[in-house]
Length: 422
Image 1: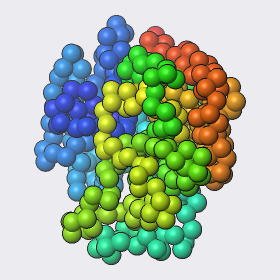
Image 2: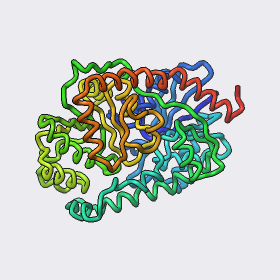
Image 3: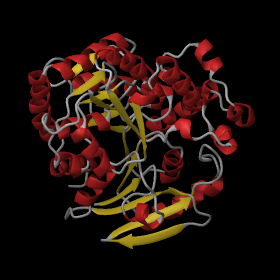
Image 4: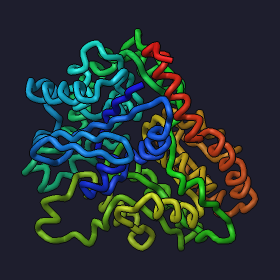
């Protein structure tokens, strides 16, 4: 069976070719590495990149195709030129089925429009419609207004405009789901939201994978850095970093030495040049004001971009891992931390309650209830038996859920079910 993947960025050989350091979508590579050796599958991968002309390469019998991304914030999926470019890739690869990795990027819609009657399926990663609705993460209008920056004036990209950007993306997401009609999901939460967008969609269950480096690490209470919290929350409000800061201030009253490690962001207080001020996002300014107001400068370490190996090691060394998001589908980083065995706390949102049972393999709390988040952090800090219980329970559960061989076999079953090819 010939399969064409449409990914949100260059992966594997393409990632190396263009020297891309990915911070998201890392679950695609383990699946690719297993899929390319499957005896029944001939795999091709296509995506967009920051290039001026189409490109092509082959590695390990996988064909890679790259199209120019363009300068627009949203890929021009209505462009006849872009549709024709995707048609040429589809003609070259002659797929029996096309799989789109996620609904977040408009080149996937362009590919679906070019596909005609070729069957397709979408792997649901996040649901943009829910991101748009929860983007501001509970921030008030007053907080947003007080965070206005020079960048907002120049680029006109206030937090409200950023939210509207996701609302626009939700429009083409809905069309993608309607055009394909076939969706791969991981949980009941995703199923009900996808059916709200298109009630005739057909859903198939399959687990997404995580990098083996997380499964290869093992948290040990005696070896971790005491009173440390790790949170992989990018610099936008939906991920809830601001509420974690508020919880941290409460934790600090009992544990003055508490330390929060935040990857994916450079230290905003070190970027005081004029160019740094121009580039500063509203949410970053809000976080800076919050940090100073709560007197947390000495308690937060911004680590910048980390590789998967570095993330796994930081999780292993941390006392607690927190997901404070206002919405999540599956939270790959949560599963990664649970695979390491780091005691976890997560907000009760999206599909998270389907993998975390509060009090058994971690703690769950209402997103806005940061005092309870603080209490749970303190409880794990102070109760070594509880921390070890969470670690001991979560790690084997995730190892059972995330099995790359089993998930690839399941994908092949789904492809066969949709195409009728056995």
